Length: 114
Length: 114
Image (cartoon, rainbow over all chains, first blue to last red):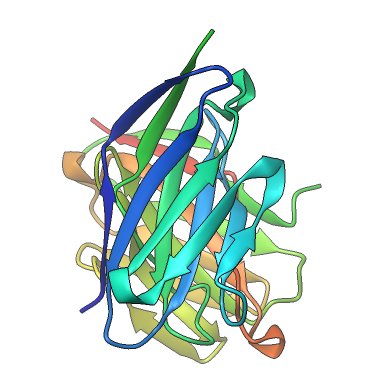
């Protein structure tokens, strides 16, 4: 069975610093890969996804992630954190053509210090 | 109006009561899902439906049932609520015609069982 591991349940960065949220998955077949963001008292919003093609994926709000098959990783980065980035971030995987049937990581709460 | 609407948004119920959470969507998607979010566990799939006549158990279906009343409506029932079903519940949709590459989430229902 597939699984997703997010390293670090809480990450704190200073405003303007690099954001790096780590995600590793276990799958023998390249899956679809996703990052979702959840702001307080809201639902999940898609940040970015990898389904096929270019392995460096750019998303909304300046975030990007790189699919590295050899490392089974899909880490999320943003060069310069903003206070508005404070939220919970979820990495998820799915099988091909089943992007709604997701297996999620446990989530990483990002705090941004002024 | 939201594309994926969940009602109620918040609910407190007593142990042993039957409760139904409802989800409706205006996106015209054929696939619908119910997820449960618990702190530190991410989101886990309870049930999913790829079309009106197709309903499948997810990872944690025990204690839950669902009904797909129409393509646009998917309800989740707790026949006899128990305190460990206290959680945040999300409905989601996806579209097989578009290759099912993304899930669209409702705003969530916060359920407390006392």
